[in-house]
Image 1 (cartoon, rainbow over the protein chains, first blue to last red):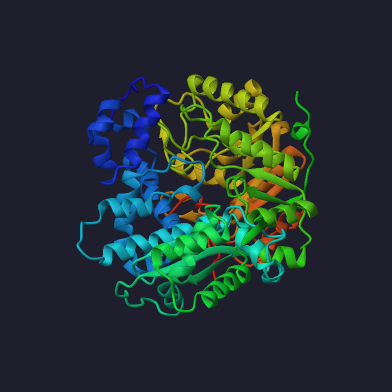
Image 2 (spheres, helix red, strand yellow):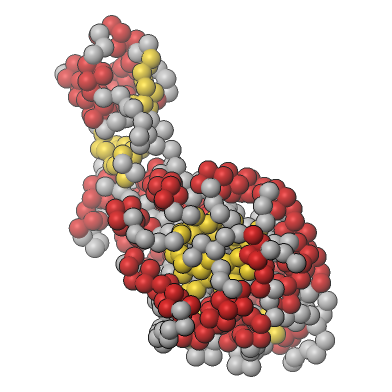
Length: 291
Length: 303
C-alpha cells in the first residue's frame, strides 16, 4: 500500500534508519521489517513509498537495494585487498562469510578504508573454537595477523631517504662500547612469534594458487620496509628474542644476557651474535646507536 | 555575484592520480595539466603513496578530492580529519579541497558510500551551517560535488539543482559538477539532465568531473570503469559553454587502463571545446564492479 502523504521524519532519524536498512545482512526487505529499523521509522515494506519514492521503472525497495548490495560488496572487496593471501587460502565463499560476520561485529568507524581490517585478526581469535593444539583456525589467525602487519608497515613511518646503521657502522665500534651500546630500531620494524611457518606459506602462495596448509611448527619473522616495499625477514628464535630486547632499549650486553637466561647458552654463541647483528644491519633494522 | 569559479583558476584537463600509474608518472612525467587525489589515501600516508604525491605535487597542480567529509551527516564533524586535510593541503599546496553533497554514515559508523540526502529546507539549513563551519576551519571555500544517487526521498521538496543553488548562496561554497553523475541520476530519477545543468549557478562551478558508468537496463550505476559515453559528452559540452570553461577531470577507478588510455579519454574534451565532433563510447552493460563509485584504497607492496 502506498502512502500519499509522507510521514514527517527528522534527518537524524532518517539517516539512522537508512543505515540500518542498507547494512542489514538479510537485505533491504528484512532490514525494513527489522525491529531496529521499525523503532526508528515504523513503516513496513508495503508503506515504504512514504519514505523512499519509486522511479518510473524501479520500486522503492529495488532502489534501496542498490545501496544494500554495494554496502557489503565494497567493504568485502577492501578486506580482500588487505588480506589477499588469507582470501586466496580460504576461497571467495568462505572469505565472504568471514568478512560479512566481521563487518557486522566491527563496522568501519574510520574515515579511511586503511583501518577497515584492524580488528580482523582479533575477530578471528574471538570467534575461533578453543583447541588443545594449534589447528586451522590458529593458522588463519596468524596469517591474518601478518597480512594486517604488512599493510601497517607499508604506509606507516619508514626510513627512506634517511641514514640507517650499516654493518660497517657496527664493525667500527669497539667490543666494550658495543656491549654498552643501545640501538634504536627503525619505526617500520615489526616482529612476530608464530606457531605456523607463515613466512614460508606466503612465499608459496605467490607461485601456487592454493598451497597446502602447513603443520604447526614454531617460526619467527620480522617485517620492515625499504624503498617503500615491505620486506619479510625470517628470524631464528635467538634473533627474535634479541631484537625484541634491543627494541625495548636494553643495551646489547643486557639484551644478550637476558636472551641467554631464557634460551640457555648455545654452542656457538659468538657466531650466533655475529650472524644476528650482520642480518639486522643488512636488513636495516637500526636507525641509530647510542652508548 | 561570485567571481567565476569562485576565483579559482581553470587548470585545464586533468586525471585522477591512481596507484597503478605511480611508476609511469614518476618515470615519464607525462604532459598532464593537473592531478586530483583521493584525500583519504594520502592524509595519513607515510609510505609510497605520500612519496609519490610529493613528487607529483612538485611538478603538477594538485586538487584534493575527499570521500569521507560526510557533510550531510547528522553526526558531529570530524575535526581530526579536517585538521589532516588542512595540513596536507598546505604541504602540497593543493589548489582546492572538494568532497560530495552526501553523508557516509551516522552513529560513528562509515559505510564508505556516498549516501543521498533529502532536498528540503531542514537539510539545506543543516548542510549550509556545516559547510560554513568547515570553510572557516579550512580557511578556504569548500567545493562540493553532486552525487550520483539511486533513491529519492518522499520528504524532498526541491530538485537537486535547486538545493545545490541554494547551498552555494547560503554557504558560499563552490560546485564540482560531475556531468556523469547528472546523467546517472537523471536516468535513475526521471529528470531532464539539461534542465538540471541549465538551472545551476554556473559562476559557482569550480570544476567538472567526467566518468564512465554502467547501464543496468532500468537504471544506471556510477561505476567509473570505462569510457565516457556520448550523452555525457553532450552534457559536458553544455556545462563547458555555460561556465565558460573550468578545470575538468576524468575519474577512472575500476578496470583502470594504462595511463595513456586514461589520459586520452579526458583529452577528447579538447576536441569538443574546439567544436570538433567526438565519438563517445556506448555505455557498458556489464559492470566490472558491483559497486557504485568503487572504493579507493592503495594496495600494499610486499616482497
